[in-house]
Length: 119
Image 1 (tube, rainbow, N blue to C red):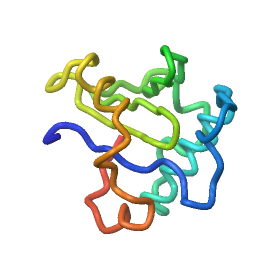
Image 2 (image 1 turned 90 degrees about the vertical axis):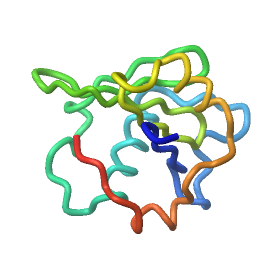
Image 3 (image 1 turned 135 degrees about the vertical axis):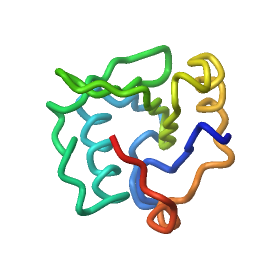
């Protein structure tokens, strides 16, 4: 997973992504923004839903910067997993397959001790 970063998207107390309820696009982007702020509380860029383009894909969501912002980094949200990856290093198919696997994600509590990625 050298070019992928797999994290728990929500704190353990959250019910997001659990049970039979499929999250809406609005719920997914709200949780994604909260996760970005958790990872880097001083982050100023990308803190609003307007900064991101989110689209349903099979049983997940894909998230990329919106508007004039460009990046080679993409996120896949599935349940309580957020997998970020560099598209030039990992194919979407490989990243999506990894997002389907619930193991190996960095816990919510441990994420602040990891290097924070920009974008």
